[in-house]
Image (cartoon, rainbow, N blue to C red; front, side):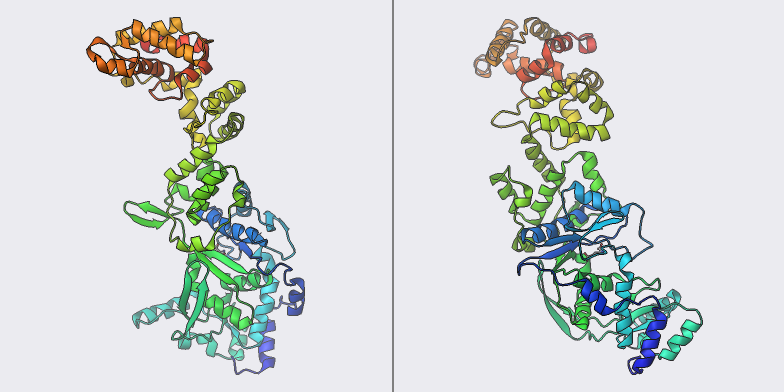
Length: 561
Ligand code: GLU
């Protein structure tokens, strides 16, 4: 349709897009260039509202958010809802709330399902339909785009034939049937009631290459695009490619940071910007988060991996800061060193390095590492803070625990305070779902439910266990300080035939039933249910004399023969 006269093309454009009345001048005026310093980066996160928030989506938001904000620039949220078939109700709120939960704050864009802030909106693509159409109309008028009326079946047949001929599939050259038709043909098809898509007339040549420097992947050499891609679908909304072109241009994006599934379309996007004569933004393609499956790596899958869903981290009780620390560390391996040197700094103050991001290729999800960030982070919280946060989590995910914690918050705080103020604070909790297994035994009902693992005392005969329990119960003095308590425990051990310490035992093992540690183990297992707990003195202090006495003499275990 290139050779058509301007008048015919104009008429066709008007017939195809009767709603497109917005003028290009008006649009240009609505979106003046941003007034920012030369080095300021304007970037964005542009998710589609599909109703699923992938942890990779948070990762892909965190990187532009950091780069934008640390440069004194702008980070905004754009909702890409042009694929109406994939849209799910409530999905925009899910995106907004997930970003909020991880403290990723866009300066502009959607802040609720129908609320937004910022001067470069609307930030929801479906509300920008007339803006896209204005440019599509212009491209048709200029002979750079044309309507194509093939049905899905007809397109399928073209692909079949191309496959049979072993040539590249797609809509190009002679296969681009409608490229070679006249405006008359188009009017005739419209007359028949057919609805077309609009395709861009490609000027690319597969034998030629574009050179481009990706922010993270470095220099790339990509073959030009030779396909006449669809820019406007039959429902009047643009495809991603075209919407990205218009939005990132008018919203003043300087850096397009996105998943590397878009790398394959980069040559096309460069072609689009060149066609419009607009300045090309910088592109940075992020490798997806991967998972180790046996010995091979694969992309974290929404369908198969529960940990792909951000809801997984909330339910497990990872504090949002911990997830962010983990993701920052995936992005920049130098982050952990910075965190160790600046444990009390706000995470926002970490300066993400593009150079370091370049080194990463397919970050690997490692929950053990996330746990270790969790232990450090929670280890630095005060007991009061920890109790409040753990309770908030438990109220949503563990009612029974929440009830017990809340019933006596002072007791809960005391429990969580054990070994907290030591030089090396206690680090046995990496996420709130660990709280039940780590401190549940302090609550009688959970202690009874969990029971005592008597296998832990396999080496001791029941008679000795009973003797130890009875004597400790009788002689335990809750007002004694740690030293006096230790002294008392040693005396008991000697009285019952245990060596007062490991050294004495080693010298003459045949003289003793065991050493002091063996006796302490009995006390610990009976009080806690297992042979692992924070400092025994502190545990007994917090449990209090009544619980200590009751557990040591309890018939849960003492009735055993
Ligand atoms: N809507 C696209 C996606 O969700 C956005 C890609 C981009 O950031 O440009 O993958």
